[in-house]
Amino acid sequence: MKFSERINLIQPSSTMALTSKANELRQKGEDIVVLTVGEPDFDTPKYIKDSAKIAIDNGMTKYTAVDGTLSLKKAIIKKFKSENNLDYGLDEVVVSAGCKQSIFNFLQVIIDSGDEVIIPQPYWVSYADMVKYSGGIPVMLETEYENNFDIDIDKFKSLINDKTKLFMINSPNNPSGKYYDSKLLNELASVLIDHENIFISSDDIYEHIHWSNEKFHNILNVAPRLKERTVILNGVSKAYSMTGWRIGYAAGNKEIIKKMKTLQSQSTSCASSISQAAAEAALSSACLELPDMNKQYKERHDFVVSELNQIEGVECKPTDGTFYVFPSFKNFIEKSEIVSNDKELALYILEKSKVAVVPGSAFGIEGHIRISIAIDIDSLKNAMERLKNTLTL
Image (cartoon, helix red, strand yellow):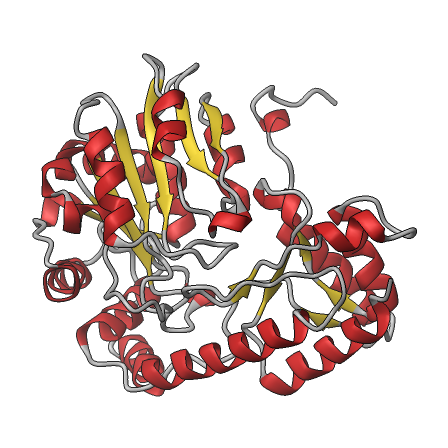
């Protein structure tokens, strides 16, 4: 069977592949601790679920406008103003079936064949393949764990050329937990301001899962001049534990948003009407559960970092946010007689420790492992004990 050339450009998500393998083993009776998925273990807050039930009872079960209900878009605009000090109009916002769809749609409408997209490493697994599917060329901006994945501005400048169309930011970052503080954002902005043909995407999905000393900033907070060529991408999945509700949104130049809406009208059309009602509630009222969820993420983070650093050959630096840690296993792999790379290590951990993790190479950085801490502390204690017992040199 002959498939399209473009579908052969991309590979299945490594995160989903390893999660599927772990679930297969579970179905066979294996006791597997799954630390692959970026999905909060907390239930969606009650006030959000109640709003969805009310929407159902009130018959809000029909198609909505392609770009989202008027009330949800107003809630998003209010959120941007109150939390991010950013001003958007109704024609500058589009609601999609998850932040992932918003990113995909944006790339499809902005990238042409041969356009280059600069992506700092490590990066979320889908970025590079999405760029390839749109006809673009992902250009990796190398960073170093030893420098806490800070971006070298000279390296960044060296990658820019006439074909550069887009620079992608994800902060706090999946998989590393790295937060781009205002100092770094200012340095990046000072370069981007001089290159008027480069667009910027700011993936802020982990905005509220953040414990850096600095209040959350995105690049528009430090460089408002970039607004017309920056698209802010966000959603309710992570902060409000609403992954299955599938609501994301994008805000930016109205001409870009208009094209994203056109593409969406010929693909998924509107997002779920009930999910939109739930998202509106999430963004319109103070979420009293958010501080406690963040507190528990930080406690899990501190525990896992401490435990991993007790394993010979492993280095785990504290992160700035998200619900992942991204330890280096480079020394362990170099000294090991059993594994020679992070992919083999992830499989070994699954087979011997019965713990599912994702190799760092899936995120563009060899020799690391991404571990999700979006799971209860008892399961994390179990997983860490298994790793400490199994990973010996």
